[in-house]
Length: 328
Image (cartoon, rainbow, N blue to C red; front, side, top):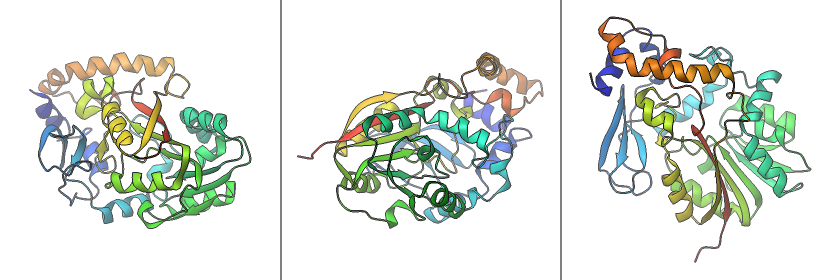
């Protein structure tokens, strides 16, 4: 069996069918082309149930099509912090409660590059966090900052306003505007992979940021070792949310063309909650299961999801440290 056949067979019955149930609580409505160069031509990379991961033949951007429409995405995100699944365990038994003090400490560690870079740059700047959620980035900052946020979830926005005194706009990025050259730092942690119109958004960010100001962009990395090895079973495949499948080269190209100088690219792992003996053991175990999965399926054995999905590993996440340069 080839990779596509293996994935289709595995997800046709339990436990693999749980993936498709999670991803496709709504049926994707939009067939789209490349969000960077508008080219309609693409090559299929792999299939993910109702959607495909494809590669633009012109610029190389990887993306999802068909995908949820803008209306569907907004509904999904606005409901996310209310659904019980946010406060229960994921496929791997890991808890995700963004209001729990212990879980918040772990998630703040995951953002250590963004937080450290901001604290080193300024102690009293004006900061915008796009997709601020429950204020994890704000909680790690040390200084007298003026905090602004953009967040779709009403519950998360209200929490961040109350806890951090931030001015939070509860809307999409396209629906808000700020003064030109207003922010010292703009942070986007796990946002750029969700947006359907990255060119429009990055142009707004460029206008809002002061000359020489810092832009921090964090995203899953579909050019990572784990992504290339696990393909359909890469842990960060979420076609109902992650619709732009950035790699280091495509995101760097995109940011450079938008007027930003990429100073450094970081790959958070060793200081996060995911670097431990248990996860390292899983790395070897799951790689073994992934290689032998075609054989297992032929014998009628369907391993649990926690044994076939890629575990956390170095390179899965990338953080871009960028600075606004004057456009010529």
